[in-house]
Length: 218
Image 1 (cartoon, rainbow, N blue to C red):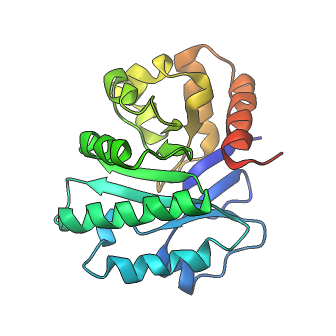
Image 2 (image 1 turned 180 degrees about the vertical axis):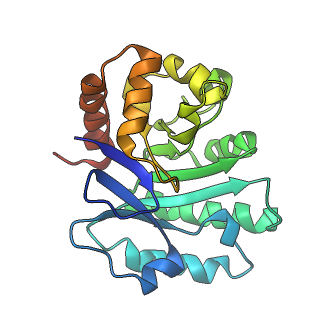
């Protein structure tokens, strides 16, 4: 069984969580049995963030909505940083209220995200998607119920993700395809190559992590 923790495509070839933006959720017919996450992406955090996040409550009632996400912070875009922080805090509160895991988008702002978590003290599972940090960065999130999702960056042996992957606890790891046109199996095979842990063993480990985080029994 292959598990894709974060993808932008519907898939029948793996157990996957399809990322859906709030506005997209209102306009999308979700296939029966398809797991998904929903949230206000930092790219779309405007001064109307509060009204937009109100729609989250509707989505969170769907039994196949497994997580809030992707949400977070991004220093590489022109979107007002204050609105990003406010939208993040509102959605963190909702995740804690509804007891939903979070899938984070975090680009060049791990320090600020860690500061927000220190302020909020969430106990829910927190998944840093497309993680490309080093071990020191990862350690900032160890005080929380945090997980690290590896995808495209793992395929390039020169990235921080590929160089530091083996140092992360196996019970804190997920794999993803994100928006890239690759099969999730490629990430499993690369993980096998880097870690010398078999693809089959990674399947077992990711399944265990998935069931634990989302309280499922696949």
